[in-house]
Image (cartoon, rainbow over all chains, first blue to last red; front, side, top):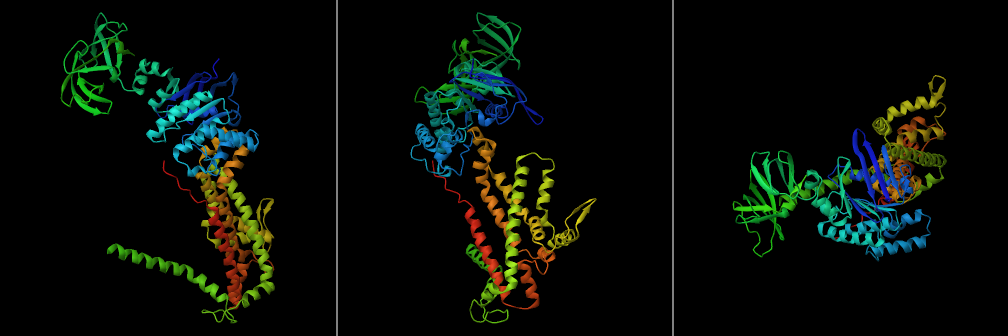
Length: 354
Length: 275
């Protein structure tokens, strides 16, 4: 039995249907991300789980109990808001102790627990400052301490890292994950950042138009996307659309929708005459100055984006634009320049049939 | 060069504006310390003669309690109503909330004389709606003055509290609920303390509105029940007695004290340190 089980959740906001039969199962101790473009309903889903909004249809079940009609303040969930929502008129220690004080815990015990929570998020000695005297990163940690000190059944994180600058965000990602494991708290993390979702989660639920499209472990959802939306939202992908003209020993000839013919390998068997969408991740492709068995397709470099460890090439071939990422494994840096002719290809295993 | 000249002109202009704003106040206060028997500027001599006269004179002794009672009661009531109304309009989806807001602000826009004339008839004779008669027999009573001042003082607390509420981050209330606070506790521990500066500003402005109100109060006063500003106005028409300047200065002092309190209710924005 999952700790949190959401079934067929529907929610309308005025005329707009924000959630359409959203279902999700979260296991005890799991770190799950709700990932999706803006407007996909991920934050609304979190608001419904927290009890700030009431679903029009569907069931939210926590630990075997339907909590649809339990008001937010009796749900025992800890939430970290996007802009932290620290109480500006209370000191840090009073902010962190607030939840405990609501649970009728005496002041001394609440302060003691709050200080331990502040130590856990590496903020000792700031207890008597006011929130406005803290930096964004520090406020973030206080908000986290405030949410976990009440030992909630669920920790809800609402895009809480997106307002930090990049370096601090990466630091917080690592730390958040460490704390989450230490405390063993089941966490639901809402984000629009695919990298964040992949690095932090046990499982990622990719959402679109108010429903979950795919819910899997990060490596599965990235390497085996269910459809072209998943493939393109999580990372980059080259898509080939067309019908299979001929097949021979795992090598297929596809007539692309633009009329050109393309030969490629696939480990999955494809039916001759049927239409397919094939996706290949840019980093799964091999690039070379000469034709070989692994690099059968000829192309022309149209764009070079150097990014330190890797270089991303825009390539013109068989009448379409390709993205190919190449590891900079020598000190020479980028090996091709715009206008260069080159050859590329990929292993049959890397053809994702959608 | 040009820049220096324009900043010089700006300084001179600001100085003139300050003088124009302050001059009547300075003149009035200066005249109150005169030892002469007529109101005039520059004042002759320096003494507290007229302040003593005010304190000992029966006319002012009668008016001051009326003014204080009316200002205190009307500011408390109008601030309570204004706060509750602002809360209802900001936090719930009421149909026609724009119209209701406009009605709450209307007393600020309607000319005082128009309001006073209307009030005079309703307060004096009552307004009969079929069998029900609203008002009547209220002219020359404390109740009548309090009711009138509630009406004219409501816009400021309403506007100020509404602004405080609109600026209040709603996620703070969500955060409190999420941490286990009931809606009532959330209001008492989060919402109320955060909009309190707005409520206090509203209260002070409402008090000041009633405290120096002349037009409506002169319509609704009787020879027996009247406020200090009305008495000052009447006295200035009859005799040019420096006691009016003295009592004006005392009214001014109350205003200065209250406005100083107001600046204390505004919280100083703290600095946000670098990362």
